Image (cartoon, rainbow, N blue to C red):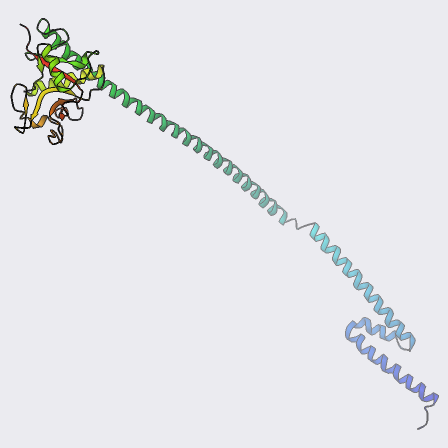
Length: 312
């Protein structure tokens, strides 16, 4: 095959240029509209056409850049300068929000003050309850003392009446009651406790004997005297009386040979004859003033009560 000639090369180059321009024309008309069409009109020729196309594209890029910058400036201006119609509403909302925050703060302060006041009142209430309790305790003590003073006053009045009645009838230190004179050994601070037999011997030496309680008034009177003397002297755990247990007879007998028949005057569970407690004694009982008698071993040491007839 023969090599192409110079004319053939030129013809081929001319065909390539025409083909490029035609393709470029189609692209410019599709993308740019009339402006690109005008650029195409100035681009007839080989190299001149290419330069015009490049120039047009550069100008278009500059225009687009300027438009972008302008849009950015406009957006920035709109952001920095909001719509004047929305400003009053926004200011009103901000003012309402500040007002609500202020009210909330005031409410919190008021609530805290109320809590503090409640705590103070609670502490004050607790202190008041303690004072009321202390006052109640003190009042109970005063009531007990008042009751004791009333009993002592009653007993003193009773003793005064008995002493007035015994004047000239009973020996010194003895108390007159219901046609008898009574001696309570523990009213004498120098008297010591004795067993049952020695206590009876002391009464005999005084011209008397151990007391025989044979009626209800005498039981009540002796119980009251024991209470009054116990208040002014010391606690008494028993006083011998004139009754003993006769094992052979199985009964309690007074020293005047009278059988004890009043079970109601004995303390609960008494008399207990099975443990050798064969001598009778009495004591004051605040809970059971009538049930005062009990049995004990005859060699136990107690104070005693003597009884004798008065002197007329």
